[in-house]
Length: 154
Image (cartoon, one colour):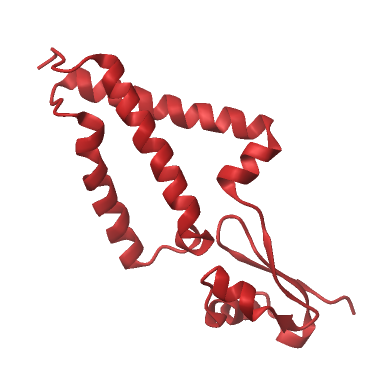
């Protein structure tokens, strides 16, 4: 139960490889994937976690192995948080930056398509901001996938 069947460092290496690969995949998948979870997105997260778990475990089924994996995951997460809090460049690379999707009452259709943002989501954000499209000064797709609307000044 507590005896490792693979070297402890191999578990850490496996976790680090999977962690970095998942960060890249999440960043490539786009802001809207992260920002708004649908039932499909939840299903993908569950299946993704199940799919990568064997790659991290490498056949290790002991309690000690599970603890090594847990400590490695938490340590990687803390390490990323530490680095991103001290480097704006790394923060922008991992977390992303806001993208301008509209200005002065006009939406940028090409930018919306490139970021896979349906116009319906923008109109929902407009309703939530109690703002008509013609009253929009700036509209942003935030790094977390939410849409921010800044109204024109009266």
